[in-house]
Image (cartoon, rainbow, N blue to C red; front, side):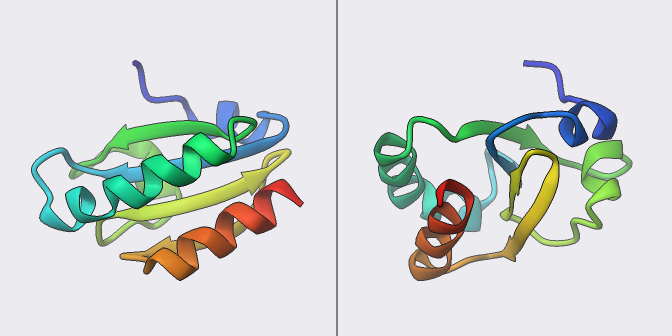
Length: 99
């Protein structure tokens, strides 16, 4: 999947989760089981995994420095931005995005 532009993200409607990371990142791999379970419980959330890296414009527009960084949005508005989140923080992000 092609990485969306920031403008495209800002125009998305409903709950959106941007997941910035890299497939080889151990921190990213560690949250996958819980993140997958939460996505299964919240099918209305549009999950957009972004393979991030140096100079990638979408990650830079959200000032991503560490992976994973999860950005929860609703109707283009950032609700929360979580860096290396705990399962409790992830659950709270889903609750905010879907309430």
